[in-house]
Length: 207
Image 1 (tube, rainbow, N blue to C red):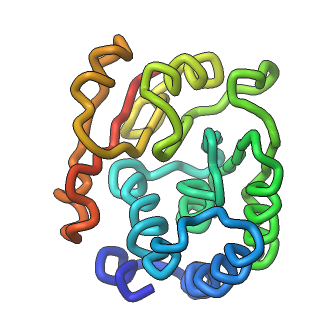
Image 2: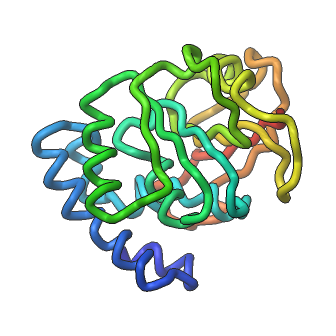
């Protein structure tokens, strides 16, 4: 938890309580349904929560903004972002129902009112549009963009135009080339200095 306060200073009391509750909640649920690797659970705040919040250093989601989290898994980056931006609306999607069971339980336990979930694949959603799609290490950029592009409204009412924001690691040269898009790329270690963020990047593709 302390690592969040190293980089963010303006949390409300409610946000502090919500973030603080994540550790015990995820450890408890992870013992029943494995949504975070065993070796990473003790590094929850650095490797999962802070990593998710790198998005919040690049954009301030305005009240009413709608965001879909594609392949949310155990709720990352969606749950930390929903805590950070309580007036934005987050729709967390995954094809695996037991993962969403954890997401729903965590969201209910900490009183998140701005999170909905859906068990489906992103490419099967036909009737909804969002301002942004977010994802974390779900699929190659080419696939992510093909899935998310039809779901994103055109627009640029915020400091970043509507689009896909993806958290990825490693050498992305070939992946970006094969995607056919030209994302804006930010090295996360330029934001958060911890060694665990070496070779991790935030990519923004405009709709």
